[in-house]
Length: 113
View 1: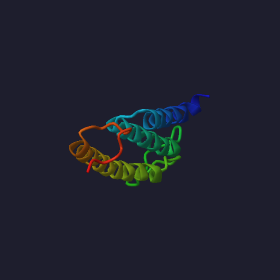
View 2: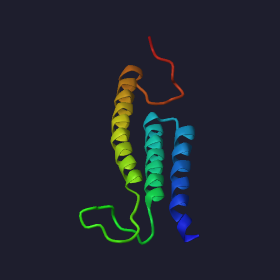
View 3: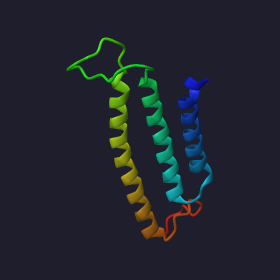
């Protein structure tokens, strides 16, 4: 059971993010929900690469033993960079929507002419 705690945390983060995306009507809160889902996915990738009692994969003085997987860590770093760029794009679009419509309420989704 103790080994499942990271995966339960991932499920909780993704569930909170989906809840915010579906049930919140403010566009900023929807964007925060998307960011929470992204954090859950990144945490899942890190949890997949974890090995109990393993060493960091530094090969200059590699110890004789099991090492953690470096690929999920590299994927997570890539995902963080892409996520920051997408988050900045979503926030800039939210600013433009607010300038155009005067509101961030998703229920008023028809653009003014």
